[in-house]
Amino acid sequence: MPTSQKPVRFAAVGLDHAHIFGQVNGLIAQGAELVGLSSSDPGAAVTVKARETWSEAAWHDDASELLHDPSIDLIVTAAVPDERGPIAVEAMAHGKDVVTDKPGCISFEQLDAVKEAVATSGRFWSVTFSERFEVPCVAKAGELIREGRIGKVVQTLGLGPHREGDKAHVAGGEGRPDWFYDPARYGGIITDIASHQFDQFLWFTGASTGEVVSSTVGNFGHPETPQFQDFGEVTLRTEDAQGYVRVDWFTPQGLPTWGDGRLVILGTKGYIELRKYVDIEGREGTNHLFVADDNGTEYIDCSEATGTYYPAILADVRDRTTTAAPQEHTFEVMRLALTAQAQAERRGFLPQQ
Image (cartoon, rainbow, N blue to C red):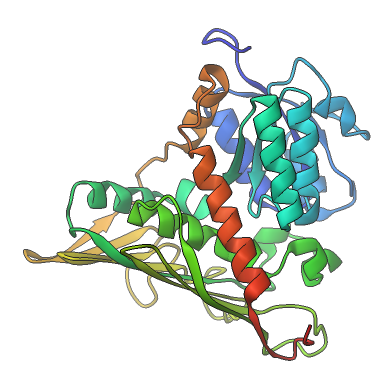
């Protein structure tokens, strides 16, 4: 077990999505030691870039060498989504905590296997909901809400647009890999992207559980890949709050970033709007927060704010806690995402099932 004098040792297994750079760099910045890399597709653009970036970390053709190594405390993964659950289960079976990119799993069967692994191993399974954990304005909004700035939260409206051709998400590669268009591998647009918004809905409303009221997935702009889902929407509720989510792959090339992610949080005494990545025709930079309450309106620049997720993860490894994200919260987020995906009405070019 690591101590305050001994750094947490971790390995990255599964290097298929560029979210791995935020995960690994976040852990290294807090003093963790990256000791190994492995991935099922050594030629993937993200894998190549990762090996160049962290050349001091030993490459392993066989991931089990890292998953089974008793000297490693933590496994981080941004593998192809259908591989993340099995990687996590194997890692926990060998005494390691797990930090996985979202979605942490793509089926109820995988979620059940993860839950069993957590229960039997005593390890934790944390899904990096980066739109909250790595976006400072979202953390700031949480502070304001817990201070009572807008009263009781009664609704969240989360928008998660993405751009299909964004090279940052594929580490400068030539394009999206084949698995990106296969729902059997990425889990569907709601499972994949909207898990972010489900996390924020529960967190901002303070709810431990929620209910999917309705959900829809569609393929409106990709007839050449009819299995691909380029649009999704969900309505949610708890006993005393409502939520709406829209995710899509329609960000235009003219926008100077990969997506105009927005979140509006309605309270009984005001509301907060977040423009996470761009304020079109407005202020430069990212992390814009606007508040309106009975005292007027305010703009808060959150670009210098810092998050707590990665220091909390390392503390959780040492202290056997789940302060970065309660384990039951993470399970419930993925349950909601999988439920909404499974129940979704299918529109556009999508084949009916």
